[in-house]
Length: 537
Image (cartoon, rainbow, N blue to C red; front, side, top):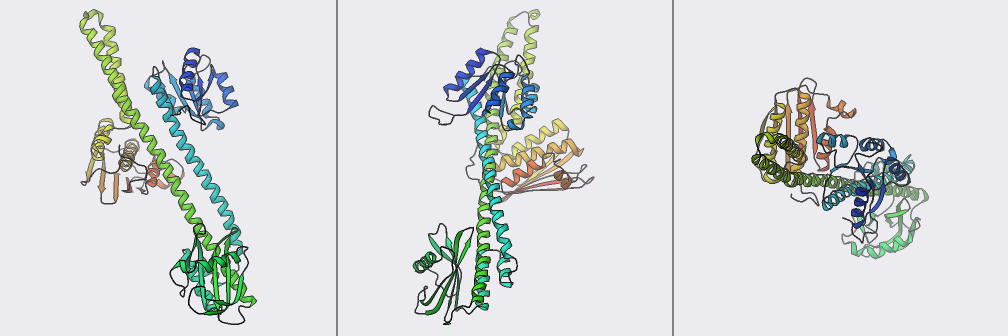
């Protein structure tokens, strides 16, 4: 939550046609050091958005000149405002179906008044946490795409130089790792050139040392080779070949080389290492032999650069995956928070309200209780809606009793709502990490929703098996089936892409087996690992 010391507080645009409410909200946010812009109607709101897009739009549902939901729909159609967080707020339009309508037109949250200042600020900060995580993920994706584009351009330029290389180049390029490429280069160079010693060395890290990639004659202790290699590095820093005669063996021992040649391994203007050749032949290498060495060094440098690129790209992908997991964690945490608030706070208030009204009914004559009984019925309906919202957001049974009990409870709900009986089997296992449990529960929830909607069956089978390092969930039905590949390609996924993304973010996979008329079998296979930063509920 922003404090008075925040350097760059978020900006909130408050839109309400009631000046007292608008000013009051503005003061609440300013006390927490948020930047606040106020607008009294739709026209002022549009003008404010034209001048500056805030971090959050707090929009009253009932404005004097336009309906807030229509305004929300209008802003969602504006590409410039596509990422703007919109929070609808109302003290009169509070029915559940109207709140759902608000979400359907593009709202990110819906706040019902009256609400305490502390709860309002907590909800706003929750939205900002999600926004910050999404912004970080978006920035990371953009940076990764730019880095891949830059590296791809470098690779395209390097590939042009590879054309026409002979078998030695092909041997290097077909190697699967930097070490194998270096060994291929060493073997071929030793066969083609009159070299008594062929070594390939790569700079390690930020140039703090050398690591030997290939060479049978060098000793294993890197520290014995550092001084002469660093001296060579100074000589080849400009990319030129270094040659010397009557050179002492830089790798120890008494051998005196008639000639020593160092080919720089450079790519993208950076020295990656050195291809070192030594010979006892007095005349050294001829021009054509130098060209072979140069071509080998170029090809080898490209391969080393590619290996480094793959490491960097994989690291970036892992960071992106971590951010995506963090976004899901934040969303689930907010679901859990809202579910508890609905169940513990609002539910208790409604229960107390019902008890008070019932007490008044009991103390009044029967003919005077008609209106109060209607209120009790409305309160009962509202309690049911609150309970349903709380369950849909996050079933508390999952946190309290674990995955199996939560699944069994959900299967009973499926039976009550859709008349589909679930045959459930599982082995015995301890509690799983929280991120695994919620992923399995959400996948099962979405898969059974699809069964109820499309399969046209009266029974489905769910299997859950856990071993030391894997968790496998399988949902099978004998219903209509579908062409999974076609639906995924046409983006008609019925939640398939969301389930697949959940599995992928945890290092697992989602396998879909289905044919028209032959039913569907969906398998989620997840590794049981505790992701960094994931905590138990």
